[in-house]
Image 1 (cartoon, rainbow, N blue to C red):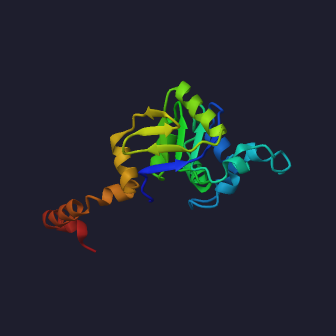
Image 2: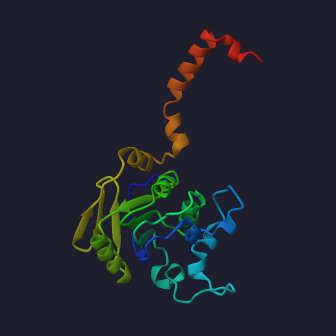
Image 3: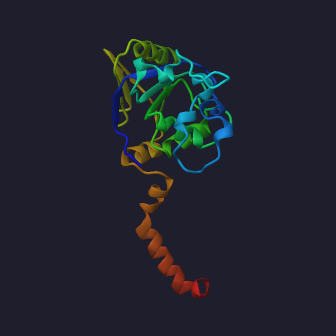
Length: 201
């Protein structure tokens, strides 16, 4: 998994509250457990009309926000079902960081496992960042310092220490477990001597 230390980018403002995972990636597209192929369907009901034509003024396909690595959005982002496909789809759109007043817990946990930083800030600060995003300003999110900088403003955010370690070191849950591979091997060797019948073919 790619390490996350700092990202500087324009941001896509999508200031809707209670965006659930079915909005992020509709259930009808959950036909694969591969992590790719979901970006084209991300936010489908926002980006396309009922007959499949692209909605011209949607922020996700706007030239104004092309290349944005940061998504600024509303309260309770990622609520609904616990599908990991949601952060997969968001990552394929190019986002490395999401800024919102709050996130659904399971969604936030799925994000860290897929290299996406979720930054929770007070509503007023999120609104100020969204306004800067609409103006095309660059925003810097620094995970080491736990700050968001835009213009002359700097906002500090809290973040889970274990999740911070995972992102800074590019570790998903399996990678984190494998950091203890020496201890795991030592336990297995000890177990083989104590309970050899467990290892007989």
